[in-house]
Image (spheres, rainbow, N blue to C red):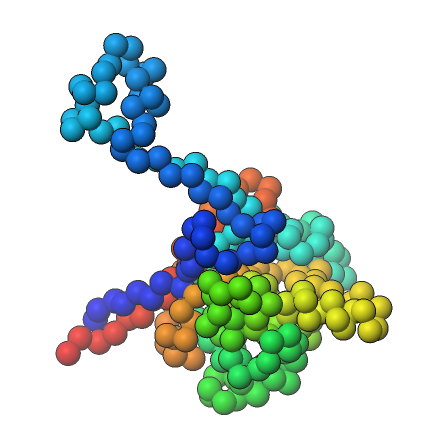
Length: 265
């Protein structure tokens, strides 16, 4: 038996469109030639020429939101409480409180690349896609959604691309025991530019962030800005997506990976 890994994560980088301008990451790079001044105070009297080849260390300074890059959203991001469906709402857990067993489970991929940008996926569409791939959901499976946005990553329209998961579609998954989901789009919900048009016409605030707000009813996490989902089959793999442990935070960065165990020969 051999093991194959598929990287499902985007880069953190300066010059690729992965977020609206106000939220983009900023990375400052220092090369080996630029860091003597950082090292010398630790070793008074040290000359740059004393260092091997005159080189110091390479280091970076990074200014990030917890929602930059491929990341895992905690229930706390969606609302202050969760699990209202039980009749006893609980305090929403933060990223450092997410059960680790949620983050390493068999994966299921739903292919919604054919749906137009801004489309809000329904429970019926989730059910139809599960029937198409011949799969019945099991508790704690990680369900990821392949949208058109995956093909637009790095382009100016990435943030506005892809379909989104609506309230009823999200609850369909959660009611069957799923506790961690994911998307290759900027948001689990439909892009804001499309929702804004619907809100303008209806003034119905329940349309805003409806997929995220499913967490009020049943606590769950989701991955955003996944990548390379088109390389995955519908089933037959595990997903590992343990988040960075940031106390009390709404999200944490993750190197999401699909893992395949394959027979030799």
